[in-house]
Every structure is written in C-alpha cells, then in structure tokens.
Image (cartoon, rainbow, N blue to C red):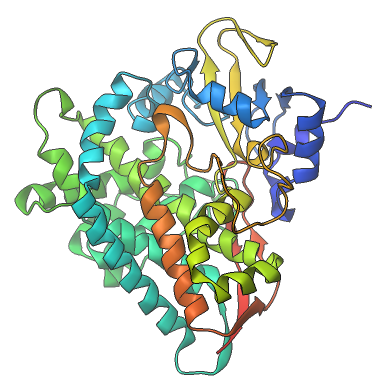
Length: 438
C-alpha cells in the first residue's frame, strides 16, 4: 500500500506534534516523495512539490543554489499571491542566490565580529539569569509557563541588542513574529501583546500603520509588504534614529556601508524583516523545544544536572531533536534529478529538516536524545551559502537559559501538556507549563 504524504501539508496535523512515524516510513520508501497541495484553510491549491527526506540529499540540494534556487520562487512552500509580492520578497537575503546573496551577507557578517559577539554573550547570560530569577521568585517550588515567562523574552532582549531596538519596544518583535510564523494559527494571526503605553514614540507611530482586519476578521497576509506595514514603518523610523546615533548594532553597521554593499530601500526593509521575524522565531521555539526534549528524557536531564560540561555537545543535540524550522523550499532552475528522481525545471523542491535530522543513515537511534552525541551534523541552522549567521548566538541563548534554570532548581517536570503551534513550517510551542522545585 502506498504512503500518503498529504498530512504534511495540513497545519492542523502539527497541533498533535510532528508525524515522525510517517516521515520515517516515507524516508525508508525512498529519498524523495511527490506531495500534492490541495486547497486548505482558505488557501488555494498549489501545483505540488518534491519533498526531500534524507540527510545526504538535503545537503546536496542546499549546496547547489544555481540548480536549486532560493530566488526563483522564494523559500516558502506556498507561492506568493502575486508577481508583485514575489518581486518584493526576492529582495530579502533569505530569498537570494549567490552572488547577490553574498553582497548582502557580507555587511551583516561584519556586525558579528568576535568582540561584538562576546559582548552579546555577556548580555545573554545576564538576561537569562534575570529572567529565571523573576520566574522563580523566592518560593521553594511553583509553576510557570516556560514559553511565556522565559523563552519568549530572551530572544527579544537579544534581538533588541542586535538590531538597536529600544528595549521597551521589543514586544513589537514578538507580535510581528506571531503574525508571520503563526498565520496558519488563529491564536497568533492577530497577535497584539505589545502595550503601546510602554513603548517609544517610534513604536506608537509605527502602530498607526498596522493593517486593519478585513470583513472576515483576518489581517492581510503577513507574507506580503501590505500585511506588515507597521513593521516597515518602524524599520524606517529606527533607521533615522540609528543614523543620528550610530552604535555597534546591525542597523548601524548596514547604514555605514558604501559602494556595492550599500543596501537599497527594499533590501533594507527586508533585512529588518528577516532579523525581526526569523531571528526571533527559531530560537524562541528552540528554547521550549529543548526543555520538552529534557522533560521527555529525564535520565538525560539528570545527566546534564550532574555534569554541566555536557552542554558542549548537549546544545546541538537538543536543537537536532526538536528542529524548529521543519522545511524550506527551493525551485529547480533546469531539468535535473534529486537522488535519481527526475525533477523538471520550475518544480518546487522542499527539503525536510525534520526528516533529515532523524535520518538513520546519519544518526544512530535518531529518535533518542543523547546529550553526548558526537559527531552531530544536524541541519537545524541550514547548510551551504545560507547557513544561519545567528547560529552561535542561538546556541548561546539555549545554553544560558536552560543552564540558569537547572542551576536554580533541583527538579523540573510537566505541570500540564504543551500546546503546539498550528504550522507546517515552524515547530512552535505556544504554552509549556512546568513545575519546579528548589
């Protein structure tokens, strides 16, 4: 009997967790599978795509940007709604191919010098310790929501440092991320956690541009420029501030560029979007994912408590086991093949990080958490020219927050079931109730 991969395109599937059993059966049956795109949840049907399941074939695809393009159809599975929308998102570094991709990546990389990263690490550790102290208070035991009380705020504080965003405005980043990453989830699509009364004048001015809901109560598609008008308004206001008062943040570095590395207006707007949304969401979901991994493997949790030096390998194993970003799209630029399977020019080729990071050909006993696993060639941060610039900072945030929580407690357990994001793209956690005891 043939296997049906259609559940993988329905975001409702993932409310109950990633269907790893289905991915494993598909991966055993073949390296690549064709997936139909039926109309779902108000979205039109699509032409379908090839899903790449095995580690070796995922890495091979990502290493060949001339053959498997990020630019041609952008990197989301669903096609943009219009040619204009596609043209705009093509100015984002995430959706570029070399050499244009390298032109934008170079100045951003200069914002992550060893000195700058060292300063950020010190700030991350201090912020993580403060968040844990606030969540635990003076009690001997208690409960909290690991997502809302801990994991949501640390990436926002880090991004505020990276982007030069005033700290009172950081929850704007949270709302923007929710709207973009959670557009398939009604709990997140209209996110409004930011309190304008506590923000800056820049934030209040930007919020005047927030799109209004349509007759059906839904906000415009956040994957379009019109759907995130408040984000782009804020970006330009922040740009004016950073030009007046430059610092060591990414925005200041970008505005100092001259010559061929100088950004166009569209490129600047999309760069801010990329950091504000993608820079927040992956680690925001990786942090509770790491905690779930430990709660599901109490022997490994105890092992990490006894030997904190295990963090050197544990961080990569925790993100591998969870894999926050489950898929990414490329588009074939010519007739070719993936693992011997013919692919026509223009067809979508979607790499499954969720499958590749559990590939038995690479990871022994892949469903088990092994905090000492080495080597660990996971693909959480991508592969090839688009390897994540913030990978080191993501690892640092995970180590700092989990380490601070373990240091401040004697035991941690579930206080209720976790609640997962309805999304085919991001393996998100909306709530994670935990009980702790000193």
